[in-house]
Length: 293
Image (tube, rainbow, N blue to C red):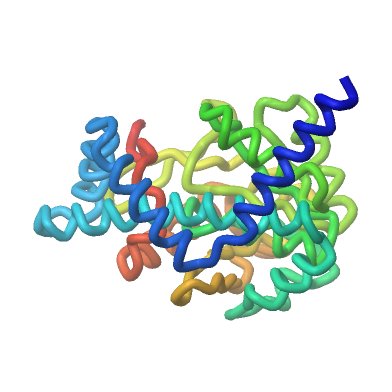
């Protein structure tokens, strides 16, 4: 039994050593191949992406929509490979990897609002590598939690579980009955909650918003909790400059004393996201059924 466990540990570390030896150009080439396969299998994925793009950009030639869709899929695959790469390096040498991560990711905009001594609800979207962005924040301050849905693909979910297992970032899965209590505790301890607002987690707490001139649902539950806890509500986005990740921090769209409703806050963030997508649509995950109302 001990021998078998040792063999499994050896194989696992062998996998991490192989992944950790990759470089950005290798990952980009691999993302090209994988995303090309995913674009055509199944065809329903391609149709969904193009339907969503037509909703957002009516009148844009199909050739341009196809290019955006394929590059968007490549960005998603590259982000996953990037997570595997950093997790592999972390498993081998966490201290050195922490230093490299802190050096390789930069901040722009108004980062003081994210790294203040106040509780923060950081609103983001399925835009570029949002998970790596949350991990970076957890290295700069604590406690930090991220609201997540479990992924149906068991391999990807197991990799995410591995990524969270030995780091300070706290996963708050929506199917966990303790998630709201843990989120409240994090905010009470003047921490940060990172949540994706370009989706909803079921009927409870969802808010109907206007997105590209069409109705869509967004998750409003964490916004209401943050307002009750007096947390600053700050939009943040992970943006890629060549192969480097940059975290853009905007000014708070709500803080104590501002007379806005939860709907107005969610709509304001949705407007910010729409403006960003009109300028840079490729990093967003166009595979979501965003306009399913």
